[in-house]
Image (cartoon, rainbow, N blue to C red):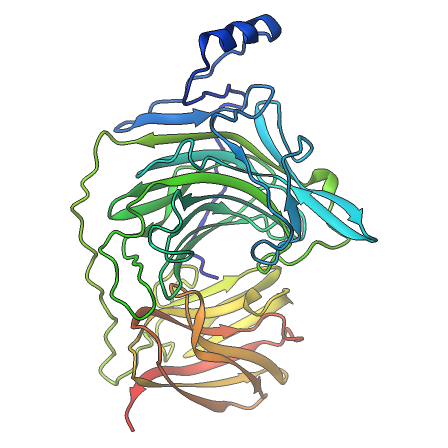
Length: 467
């Protein structure tokens, strides 16, 4: 996981009620029939955005889903990510209420086992577009195993090849077990690569109120926003078939994409629901979706040159590895202390030592985590990680060098080590065998290890070694 920044909760803005606006008008006979059977619906105009034209929008204020914009997507359980739900066309799973589209997860029983249905809609072949600004206001459900998302896929997934070569733009994802955190992500490759930003609310959650999620997609850059605050900018993607040259930049994000929204149940990321999950409240509410475009885009763009961190004079790629300087551990400057999935704790630098205290170990290894980013990993090079560590009580931690931008593969594999009460030096050598990566990440993971004992770390080094 990668936490880009922490934002305070902002008051969400936008209309609570609005009307669906279609991209194509029905014929005159249909209009006349509708007028004789239904009360007129007041149309709500989407607000103007300076520098953009409104391409299409849906305010979800009618009585039924506007199927000139949206398709009800049908999928069997396990279709992707080991998710449990069946996506159905049922009005029980997909419906409008109080000016919102509601995608509802339902728990039933089939063949003596728990069975889940839910809703997913997409705009493929109806409102596809290339480049623009997508704005959506939504409120997510809370509950273990619930996984709401607003995201985009290419109209023709085979144009550059199947996922991830085709590209994917995730405007918003939230895990129902940790609704104070929202993610924006872009996937591409091959090999699979991704970049991800995270917003953690200081107060409230993304389930306690509506928030506005947005992405600005341009030929050479994408920017992610929550409640108007930019938290992730990406401009260095690629795509290729394994073993072949990369396609010309900005592929794969130079083709028509469509918007889709769903509420998944279970899967490899959120885990499965448990007895604490209240399916009476398993509702993903979307207030509106609005898509804007600039009058024109400059498509003559070049991929930025890759910059690799330089080692210090002593050959160490870790900055402040001796902890000689005090730091703000909440930012991404050198060391960064992170908490996820129930982890509670604190970190401080004192007397040339990183001191990590844990109140709650959380539910995953990275629930309590210390990282340093931008480790330059060059294919064919050999590296050595060394550090000193001890703890108040003997306990385990995990160390690794990960690849946040390359599908979270490991250059130094997850290595569990037992930290004794006496200061001990640990050394790990590894060879980089993957594609060059300027964004390797050294991680110390203290979560979910069966202990909350305080850990002390000194003299951290990552250096290139020769035979």
